[in-house]
Image: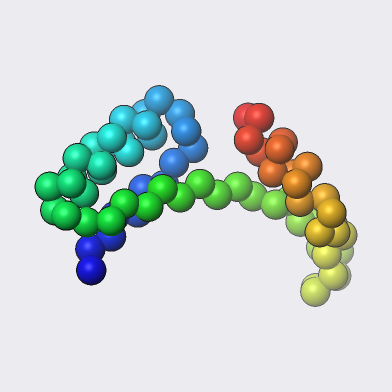
Amino acid sequence: MRTIIVPTDFSNPSRNAARLALNLAIGLKADLHLCHAYNIPVKSPMMGEVLWTLPEIPYTKKDAESL
């Protein structure tokens, strides 16, 4: 199985890279996966304690996508 993973931030350079990867995947008969990740800010005053809760994640995602 052949798989090409393309990290992207949806900027113009990353779109060009994704197009190049698509053409490469077609030529190699490979699968193509796009990967977009964002940081979840974590403040940890003590090891193992996290000060954010799961309901805050959609707002964090929205903030990350607006950059």
